Length: 94
Image 1 (cartoon, helix red, strand yellow):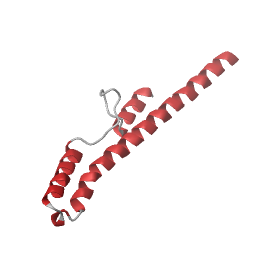
Image 2: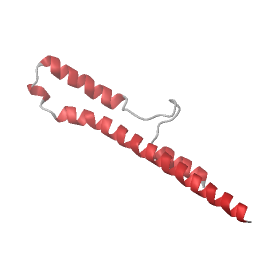
Image 3: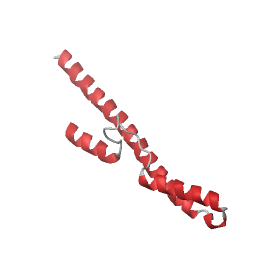
Image 4: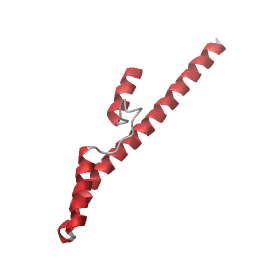
């Protein structure tokens, strides 16, 4: 009986820590994606019209890159760590 209680408590603690680690990865992945798309807004908010044409072109490239493919944390290019992934995993876990 004591052995079963120990196994169940170990399993619950293990699942809790795995879910906590997954949550931290998903949180940081979500923050990274949001901040990398925010780069385009910040670049647009600058006074780009006062810059030399060469520098203004670089800002356009930065804005296109930031909006087309934002940075993200992936699991082997299989899926990206976002809150949607965490919700999907946590619902399937229960």
